[in-house]
Length: 245
Image 1 (cartoon, helix red, strand yellow):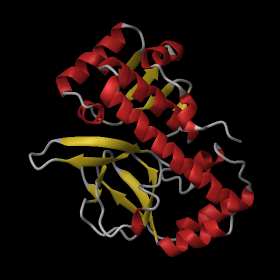
Image 2 (image 1 turned 45 degrees about the vertical axis):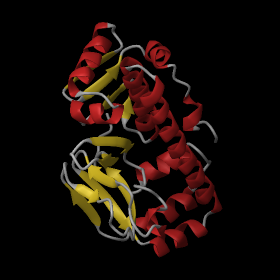
Image 3 (image 1 turned 60 degrees about the vertical axis):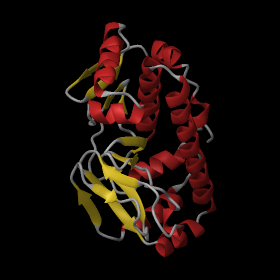
């Protein structure tokens, strides 16, 4: 299985290639984003905090991070996962103040790219601009699906939908082998992303195991029956737009 190592902009190139047919010159242009030092951060640390003035574009190249909102009493809702190849909010640097926080769920590596450098790179390659627009539309589609899950799907349907989505996203950047992928986050993280208590989340995982939908051990998740899991989740992959080339 592919591992989450320092892969530079390769995960990003793999991802964008799912939306547009990119060539060697596009790959070379993306590699120009690797000129700065790579940042490393351990799990349970914030990459950016709500209220900060964002000034750079962050590209995650290894590990998992999340976008989250929290309440004054400490309750937290994870509202998005960042996987290798994802920008941690592509256009966030235009804001005066960040309205959410970004946290490292595992050890992560990422680039901090100056907006001027980023703009110079993509201006040279029209296909990159179009692919990035696709990526932003997919990010919006994912947010809509998460909102639908919280509002309408049952706990089992929510978790099934998330696992199928993560499988397709990780497959797109070469981090899934067969129907198996690393799931390095905790049950608490899954609970915070699905609007469930840790106890309810654990019961739902046990139900999925009993029904023969998944196997989960040593932070490896195997989808035993993808067709059945998609049926449980009522999953329609159209919002991921991975077949546009």
